[in-house]
Amino acid sequence: MGNRISKLLKRLFDYPIKRKPICFFRSEDFTTTGEPISKDVEQERSQLTEYDKLVQSFYTRLDQERQSDLKTVEKDVRTSFEKIAEQYPGWDDVTVSNLHNLFLLFDNNMNGMLDYEDFASILECLGDTHTYEERKEKFTSADTDLNGWITYDEYLSVIFNFDPPDQYGLTGLAKLAVLKAENVHFVTQLSVGEQLEYGLF
Image (cartoon, rainbow, N blue to C red; front, side):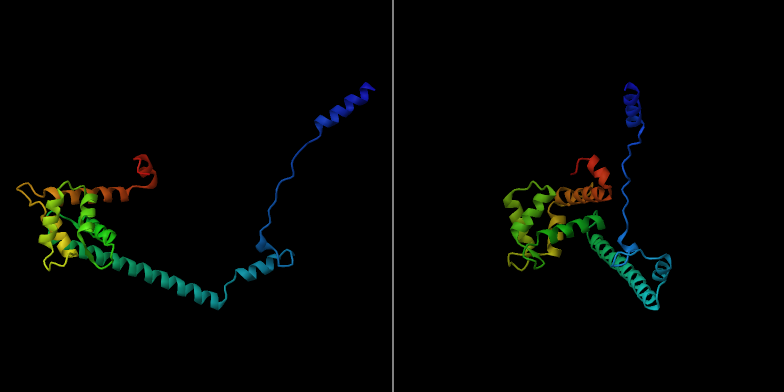
């Protein structure tokens, strides 16, 4: 009796208990009826027809043209920012680009002009500490046609000339615009991991 129990226990503990491996089949390896596709049929499928070759060459050429057009547009935008920056000594294309983006962001009426509230919001965003009266006075003096709106050129001019430069260079709002642009440019150059390291999220 004891001999039988020991044999039974030995069989239980020696029996290899293994899970059946999970095997996934790709759906493209089977026909719609569930039959496996032979390798000959797969090779026929992998060979491109004349139409496939034509479509592939069309999309390759289209992608190359779009990449080229995108580079041209970026170059034109950068050149235009550089030309504008030449009018304002001490500013570079990065500063003008940042101010341009702020203008687009706060142009709530989408008419290419800013009213006083939008202009004041931009000044707050730049970290300006001038009083309401000083801001309103500068806005009114920049509004040459007295319609309550300032254009993009007037906007750049009023920010640059808000505080006149001294012998050491830019001061006040013009200098704040440069500093903010440098900070934004620095952050955009960081990878996501570096941004997380700096605690920007």
